Image (tube, rainbow, N blue to C red; front, side, top):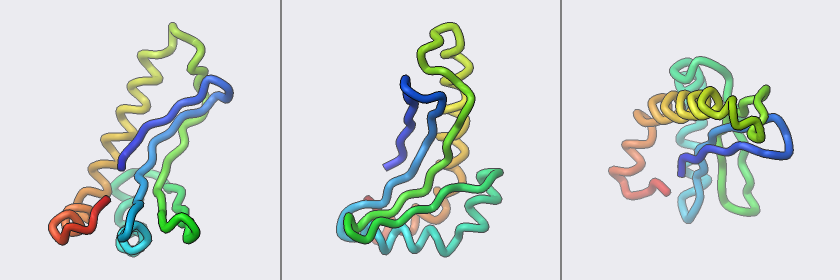
Length: 106
């Protein structure tokens, strides 16, 4: 799952890719094996997190410095989120596609 997030309580938002389900950790580890390539394609370091209790892992990028309550700034905020979503999608796609072909991506 590729998702976007913003908060009205704190000045941040972000995007993340969640690997869940029966193959969640295996898929996360398959992506993690390409961390340097993914981060180079993305253009900045990403946050990598695994939760073995939930059998999941995630790759995320947080965006700080905007107030989701400021309606006049929303067009800029949406552009920031859209940019990060597209960059993350493009960065991981070469490594997710083979997982989809195997039927393991969730």
